Structures are given as structure tokens and as C-alpha cells.
Amino acid sequence: MNFSLYIARRYLVSKNGRNAINIINILSFIITIIGTTALFIVLSGFSGLKDFSTSFSSYFDPDLRVSSYEGKSVEVPLSRKRDLQQIPGVEAVSLTIEEKVFLSYEDKNEIAFIKGVDESFSQIIPTDSILLYGTWLTDSDMQIVAGSAIASKLSLTVSNYGSFLQVMVPKPGRGAINELNINRAFISMDMVATGIFTVNVESIDSKYIFTRLDAAQNLLNYPEEKATAVEIKLLPTANEDKVREEIEKLFDEQVVIKNKYQMNDALYKMLNSENLAVYLIFTLVLIIALFNVVGSIIMMILDKKKNLKTLLDLGAEVTTLRKVFFIQGSLMTVTGGIIGIVIGTFFVYSQIEYQYIYIAPGIPYPFALQWENFVISFMTIAVLGIIASYIGSRRINDRLLAQAKL
Image (cartoon, rainbow, N blue to C red; front, side):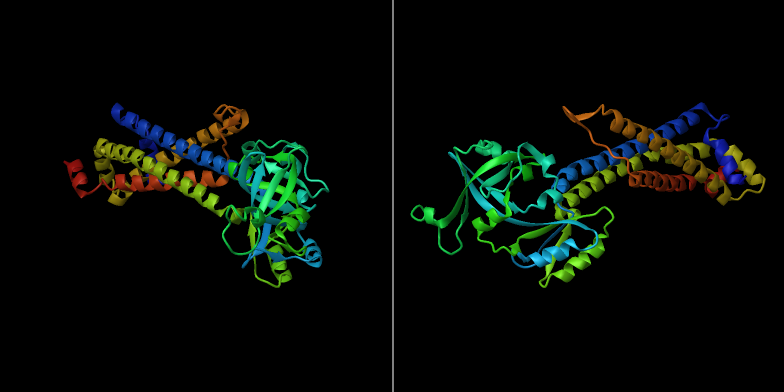
């Protein structure tokens, strides 16, 4: 066995030293375990929150969305849609039209976005899963499915043919809208809500109403071969990069192709920034905690001055003595880090399985076990522990050794 490693292991818990030194070493070891456990739990908690926050919005988004680079619409004749469906890796293709509209129901008004979808949309998004009550769109042009927040604000009732929802958009042209021309300034269509949907995301539930694609085309005066976006669902085995290349070949004009991550880039950036901020805060806490490791190494060096003299007399070099205490500190922090990660893993796994901590009634706090968190936690404590051990071991110098010889 390596000489420095052998001595370091003997010194890790010194049986012959002062009792206070052993207590300091044990406390430093426990603090390392607690710090690593806390870091791992917090990282796993933020990973769970990230998955929880993005699951709803990404659930509503297609795998790929194709839109115009310039302007509001892309040209998608029937032949191009068929070509898109023939691309290897593409499962379904749906044309959509989206525009801001003014809603009026009885004595209540609201601004929303109308989204016209074709019959393939249910293959892109599982519409049955997001329906709160009612039914999805059928063959009628006058039907809509409203977000739960919009329905609540308008007190909208399902299948109420005695009171229509008025959907209005401004007519194209210039000129201000005033009380004299307000009736002539809007294109209006009377519709009936056949269902209410929810994805439990306020920004979506309060934003959208769905209708058939041909109804949206009539309301917004869109030609049949144009849409604001093409939404695509990929097969699980699809190569996204290759699908993107094939899509770009089919469009004469320049288009923008976004996946789920790119559609929600602001949300992902915010969550990643928060995760980084929390990681840095807990890393700072670990740095402060590892001052105990530096202190325990220095105390051990002072306690073992006589042993150092003996080792010097036997021919040990200063670098060898420093290496002994460097290895001792590294063993303490790395072992403590591994134990901390094991404890943290047990805590996170038990929360995932038994759900004993809740954000709100019926909503357990989300945690996620991800390999990145194992690596980040271990590397953080290992690197900081090695630095702390190096700083502590540098306490062995010529002055200290001269005192040991006295």
C-alpha cells in the first residue's frame, strides 16, 4: 500500500490523539455529508420542478412547428402536405391558423386567440386528454372549444344554442375604429362552445379557443392553401435533424422550424437560470462548510507534530508529509460526499414513491432522479474537498517542522 495513503487512513480517525481532534474530524465529516445531501436534494427538486413546469406547456406543443420566416403565413397546398407526410419519421401533419380575436358572450367581453385546426390535429395533440367536459370539434363550422379560463371569465356554457358566442376580428384596412363605424369595422361569426379544455397552464387556458380550420379561414379570409403554421408529430424513432432537412427542401420560401424546447425557450432559460442560481448558493454554503475540513486538517497537523518529527528522522520528505494530510482531507470529503449522495438518493426516491411532501393538497412536490445531478453533486464536493485539503496540507512548512524538532 502507498505509504502516504496508509498513514492518511490511520490519521483519519486518530485513536491515540486528543479526543477533541477526533470530535472535530467527525463533525467535519458530518457537515460534509449534510452539505452534499442538501445539494443533491435541491438539484433533484429543481429538476422535478423543471419537468413539472414544462410538462404542461410541452404537452400542448407539437414535436415540430413550421412557420414563415417573414410574414404571418406559409403556403401549404395539398401536394406539399402529402409530401410532408411522406417524410421518414413523420407520424402526422396538421395545418393551423392562429389569430387574435375579440369575444363577446351575453354581457361579457374577452380578448383571445382563435386557433383553426384540421382533422389531423387530434393526432398531434391528444385532444381527448385535454377536454375538461363536452366534446371536441365535429363537422360544423360554428363550433368552438374554449380554454377553461376563458370559459370562466365569459361564464360560457357548453352546447347553449340559445345564446351564441360572438367571435370578431377587425376588417383589413386603415382608419380608426369609433362608435360610428364599429359595426362595419369587424367581421363577426356566431359560434357555440361544444367543449371546454384545460392543460392546467393559465397562459394557455386563458389564451386559446379552437375551431375548425375552414371556419377560421372563412372568418380570417385565409385562402385554402395557406396556414400560419404546420404542426408535425414525429415517430419515437425519428431523427429530428434529418426531418428538418427534408422539410426545408419542400418549402420554396424561408421557414422557421422549432421543436418543443425552442417554442418554450424563455421558460427553459428562466428555469435554467434559477437552477444555476440555487446551485451557486448551495456551493457557497459548501465552501463555507469545508472551512471545517481545512481547520480539522490543521488541528490534526498540530496534534501530530511529534509523529512528523519521527517521520522526518526516518527520511520522509516535506512533500510526503503534505501528501499524507492532503489524502486524509480528500478521503474525508469524498467519502462524505458519497454517503451524502446515497442519503439524498434515498430521500428523493422515497418522495417519488410515497409522496409525503406536498406543494398543495393533491399535488406532491415533484422530484426527479437524473444522472446529471449525481455527477454535479459528486464533482462539486470532490473538487472543493481537494482544494480544501490542499490548503490545509500547506500548513506543513519549514517553520512547523523546525518547531517539531525542538
